[in-house]
Image (cartoon, rainbow, N blue to C red; front, side, top):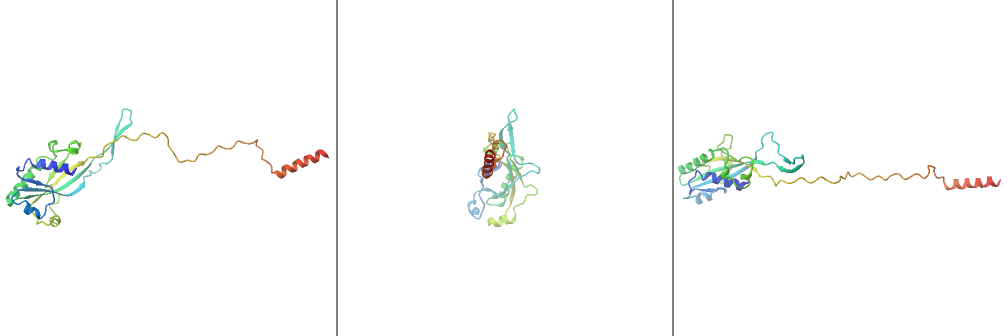
Length: 219
């Protein structure tokens, strides 16, 4: 997604910037002072990414159903992210730098969303728009700690925010229903058939019964 947003921003700014101006996305540093000498440059530095979650909007899956109501495909809903950029201009004099910053401001305020002409890859196929805003109220304007971390003296800059969707994974068909369900229950054996309903007497009792019967018969 990041590389596709870079391509979109470069395409957008090319409509307002002179053709000889270089557009860079790498981190600005002390080396830029020498590298940009004699070359007008616009730096677009990505310094923060955060998810853009609308209040009350669930993030989950959407189901595609067949005419009979069966779910034939499940697709994960796209998440949207805010990409926060610090835009700087580098030229031989401050007037030219301000001119470049003004061109960036003009390009980013013509429309609130990027047109299809600037979008490539997954962004061009996304169903939700890619929006762009610059110098919006509430945006942090180049905090001092960013300049200190970059080892640079604070300079004129713009805050630019792009909100873009992250392409969800490829959708797939749901798994087929199982043929059987194992509940983990133990198989119970059926009771053994009865041998006549009479209890079997111990061997000593049966022998005594036989002896008594024998004596009675003899007596």
